[in-house]
Structures are given as C-alpha cells and as structure tokens.
Length: 408
Image (cartoon, rainbow, N blue to C red):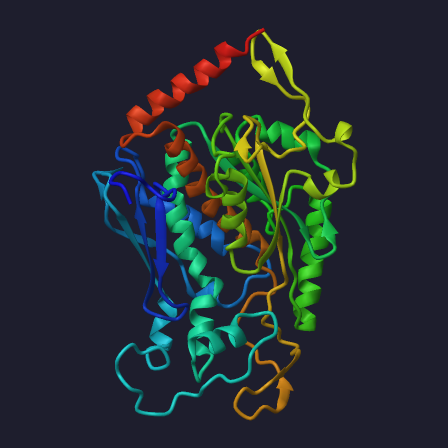
C-alpha cells in the first residue's frame, strides 16, 4: 500500500458505549468532537430525562434518575477537541452486586437463566458467545444501553444546533392508535426548526401531537398492561437546517441515507426504517412522487413537496430530512409465549424480565440522539475544520454560495 492512501472512509465523530444494564454504570467515549462547542451538563441530562418519560414505562424508571458525569474532553464549559468520556451510574447496582459481581465469586449459588424469550437476543447471544447462562446477554442487549447513546449523541446535537441544524421527533402510532395526516401542524412547527416538533410532542405522555390519538394510545397501553402484553409503534424523526450536498453517491459507506438508516435500526427493537413516504411512493407513478424544482429570486431553488424525505441520490437535498422508524412490541411479556429450557430441552413458558409495556416515546428520543453524529460527520466530511468558529464560517459561505448560484 502506498503511503498516504486511505482505503476506507473514517467517521470524524465516533462513539462507543460500555456497561451492563445492572452493572455499576454505563459509560461512553466520544472521539472527534470539534473544539469550541459550548455545552452544559443540563443539556445532556435534560435529554436523559426525556428518554425516561412516557406512559407505559416499567419499574426501572422509578429507580433510576439518569445523570451524566463528564470525566474528560470539556474545559470551562467548552469542548477541547479531545475524547469526551461520560459516565451514568446505575442506582439499581446496589441490588445486583452479587449477581453482577465482576471479580468476587458469590458465597451462594446464583440462579442461571436458561429459558430464552422469543424476540429477544437471549438464544442467539447464548449460542454465539458460548454462555451457560443467558444473564450476560440480557445485560448488554438491554435497551438500558441507550442511555449512554443519548448522552453521547447529545454532544453532536449541541454542535449541530450551534450551526442552525435541529433534530426532533414525535410518535405517529402506538399499536392501533394512529395519528391522521398532520401536514399543516407539522409545517408550522418545522418552520420554527425540528426541535419545535419535539417540544410539542413532549407535552404528551405518549409524545403524540393529536389529543384524540393520544387518548386512544393511552387506553391501548393500559389495556395491554392489564393483559400482560406489550405494544410497539412508529416514530417520526425530522432534521432541519441541513443544506444540500451532505453525504455522497460515490461509495456505499458515504451514502447519507444508508448511514441514517443504519443508525436508527441499530436501536434496540427497531425493525424498519423509511425515508419520507417511501412505501406510499412505491405504489405511485413517478409523476406523483418526485419533488419538482422551482426557482425564485429570494430563495433560489424551492420545492412544493418533500416526498423524498430530504434525501436524493443518497445526499441531503436541502429540505427537511424526514425518517420513520417502526418499533416492534417489547419481547419480555408478563403473559408468556412458548419457549424451552436450553439445559433440559423441555418445552416451557418464556420467562419475564422486568420491562416496559411500551417504550416507543422513549425510542423517539433515542432516535434523535443516534442520527446526530451521522449528520455531524456528513457536515465535517464536506466542510472540515477542528474548531466551531472555522466550521461555522465555512458553512455560512457554503450556504451563501448555494443561494447566490440559483437565484433566478
């Protein structure tokens, strides 16, 4: 290999999380954040608090009050360009010191979990890593890990906000409770920036925008809880302020649509991702799908529709990026499904691990967090820069160039 040749695209901002659901703490290391980004603990902790809310959450949320500690990478309230390390302590750890001890052998036998839950990582994880106990799989596969991802993603979110790029979400369906079309309401909120959508959604215990649908969702969650069942739903994610040309059609691993879809589907229990109205578009002719161009002296290129969801040719189009995520019902059920014991190979009802009835509202907050580093990396790939001020100057110039180029 010749010196200086890079064989693959490397993300500028990357993060890793560590920790078990009932271990001492969750942690995250965020590498590649530019210097000069002002950030407070309150900005991180407010996102963690949003993740813990929502009707249908389980008993764990009554125990934990997630707060992040910053151990490195921030000085006097601003990022310094070095790796940022974050820790979120688990208050429930005090009840699990024997079961989840790292080094000390328990003085009394700890019961093994040998009955996998359908729909969870239990069986495949046990087979993959050669465990004789499903407990280690449960601990890391748990959606508790998303608390660390929300903390890590908030750093990129704050960075983007400083550049006029906002992220927000709301819930359009929980079970059979489905929001009707909200085009006018959404247009009004999105004109204020995507965070306006999130602020409005956060006023609802199920993060919905319509009161009638909210009432149906609340009733559906309560009914599912009484049956010992769970519910999934659909999350609508919006990103505003992204100029055209982020991402690339040149290589598969630089395609912005693919990166965004991968980030969202990496969230526990997310089984589908849609860009704009993709599935609806699939049943229509092209003349009713593609967003026509118009030119104006004041705005340059404009569109009257956004059926592409703000992404064309794997790049941002300059419109609001709209993503939809389908979350399956949680797989830990009070009313058990059929399973078997991996040691005796005898059929048995699946076991219950403390869980939620519905976590769709919380998953929307997680989705907001995980797309933030993707957009931040697309921005840094296009513009470069190590400090917020120089990045802002380059972005302002890029935006102005686009406006001037296409004014009729």
